Image 1 (cartoon, helix red, strand yellow):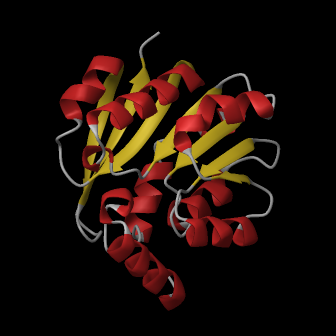
Image 2 (cartoon, rainbow, N blue to C red; image 1 turned 90 degrees about the vertical axis):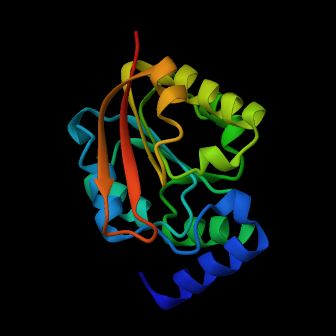
Length: 186
């Protein structure tokens, strides 16, 4: 992670801590753990929610097929602009609550996988439920939702909508994180 991205992330956190969720970008250890959970040869369409400075996006880029549709969502304007410059081959949007509309606009019927760095527990109950509904409705039957969180507080809510296959603990991240590997219940 370069110093510019780290500084940008910290500044964004100071401005909007509830939206950013951490003072530091995801580590390469966390990014790799996230993408290792995906059968990339089967992915035709994927969305990343809360792309931040692109730490996980870089890992997605190194695994995903050139033919796959990749949707990035980042609410912070400056970080979103940087993502568009760094990953011009991907479609970048600001509001993850518009996931289904964005898919429709781009002719994407279903996603094989949704990868998320959104700090769900920081959000209001209403926003959290709206986002999770978008994720559930966007995924194909048996599709995967892979999300990291800094606690296990989302386990109960996620288990109502998904089969949680695994939860990985990633200590080499600041702060340490949990990676939820969730499969859509058909």
